[in-house]
Length: 402
Image (cartoon, rainbow, N blue to C red; front, side, top):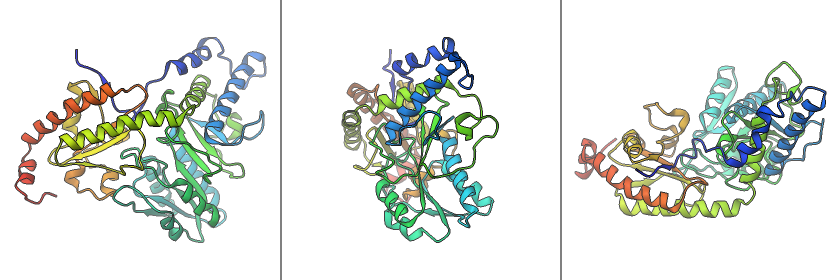
């Protein structure tokens, strides 16, 4: 049988045994409604409170107190958190005459599409361009801030090329200028140390299924003193900010997962970086005309993203799947889209090169043997696809290719 290698952890992760064990009682034993006053229901309320404390501790947020407005609110996913952060802040600040949003041109579509929706409502949006590694500078942010700027939203780590942005420095600029700062940290939480207070972060989005919790649970950190409109009207759940009966098992799962992911980030990151660097070096050594996308050093510990001239990413994915290797050619949220990645175009890649991208994202379950297996199977796949490509023949002949 072929080896099975799951190298798409940026798309989603396996729910861990520890998380499953923590969740199980809340499906069939402790299934009470957290809003019910009797002890059976209050056990669910206490479980939600514990999970809120776990998420707050992982982010460096204030420890939530029972029956007091917290800084951590549970949502269904990172996309919901992003939508709530951007639309909530902009609608609230519009009452003060501040209708300008600053973000970048290579954010996750949850941010970009939210920004575009706000533009349709008459808000003004500045999209800062990133450099060839996917970086912006604090000076770019400072230069873009205006009198009517309400919010700056910059992702912590890019979901495709893994670039880590200078979040503490950007946060400091926003703090000095009196502008709220949000970061989409869906890919970063558990992979790099985060301290929302020290890094001047006012709002932060995260998602459970990127760190071994189930799909369908996320959170939004909202610094105390920042007031957002309620996301969903109805009951009093989530302190009247997001009505609807709480998904207790998934909330418990998120709390358990984020605590485990942040237990020893340096050791976890070192292990992933060793595999990442071996994979990057091996691809560069074995495959000609391969381009590493993103920064070599300022990148997520498990992220590897390459473009291979002369071929398209979809072909690679199909052949890798035949060898038991799961990967992606971009964001999982845009699978099936034939257009080249907006992230790769943003860092300056031509359309033809951007089409030949491959993302390999390593996680806790991967091993060096997995890396060696990828390095064994990927080069002949690229060679085989290039042998069938008329574009590759033009590249070898030195002809220009768009």
